[in-house]
Image 1 (tube, rainbow, N blue to C red):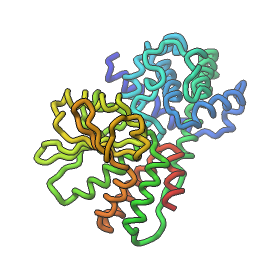
Image 2: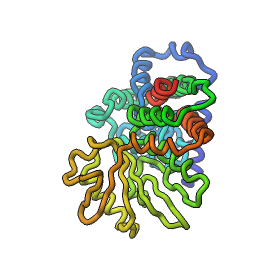
Image 3: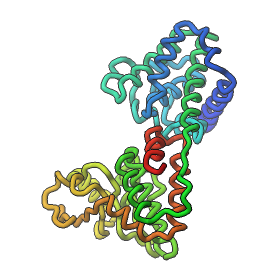
Image 4: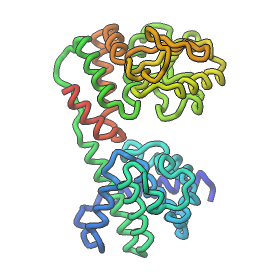
Amino acid sequence: MEVAQRNEKAKQFILDKLELVSTFTESDFKVLDDYFNLKRSLNSLINVSAKGFRGVVATAITGKFLNPGYDPLNDFYSCNPRSIFEQGIFYAFENRIPCGKSDPLNVAKNINVLNDEWAKGKRPQSAAQAAVDYLRYIESATGEGQEDIINFFFFKLLEYANSIASIEISLPGEQEWPNGLFGAKLSRFVLEYPESGTIPQLVVSKLLNKVYEYSSVVVEGGDESVFGTNTTSKKPADIWLEANNTPFNLFEITVKKVDAKRLDDCIQSLHVLNMLDQPVHFICRMPEDVSTLQGVRGGVLNYKGKVFNFLDISNFICSLSLLLSGDQVIEVLDELKLFVQLVDRPVKTKEGWKKVFN
């Protein structure tokens, strides 16, 4: 079978399963042997923010569909998980089931044996163990019994997705948002609900885009994945400005510690891109995020001959917010609201939005 054909078959398999289980109710699965233990395992596997472990199970099930002789517990990687997930399953899940681009690889890259030892130390370990346990249930069953256990997984997965989608994301009914209040709330949202760096980068990107909306300056990088390092993704920074297709002013956005390793990675990335002469600004929490760096004075550090600037992210967000028009403030809020509404956003982010903005 050609790779493209296989991946399309994987995608259609998932779509068909989601369509099928949408017609079921919980009662349809209560006849299963060991129903309560199966349900307990699925709750531990699915009802968590970590997407990788349910991605492992979805990939393993799809691998068995493509090759009935496939043994996911002892030869997981033989199904080509990267290909069938990234080019098949992901597109079936997209905008319907919370997922990332490479979920199974995030927790089981180059892993063949999925067992208790693999699950040990994973975060959360209960979800990893549940993935192993549920695959054992599948492997120990046959025929219709096995198919019912597989369907139960997709039923609970869709149920979880629907529960997330039902969380209402809104804004108060005020006609106007004072810039100061807008900036303060954005800053709080970024600091308290950063979502592994996704929210800070998104917010700063949107603010910069509005600031330069009517100029020839272009804001780049804001639509890139925040999970790839600049070195591997060949980006000069998280966000950068361009004029006449020439980058200038590179911004690294973070709410984590900035250590020497982070600076070394930045220098390496800029060296590869022949951009060491470009100014780099770390937008971070000051002073706590630079506490391990020696020699920072007035927000500036000369490290290995490269000058780095450090600005407090809260002050930066509030300052940019003051430069926006009233219409732009509303536009940013509406755009962020739509982003938070996406099914892929964690429940914590959604609840955080409601707490900060409502």
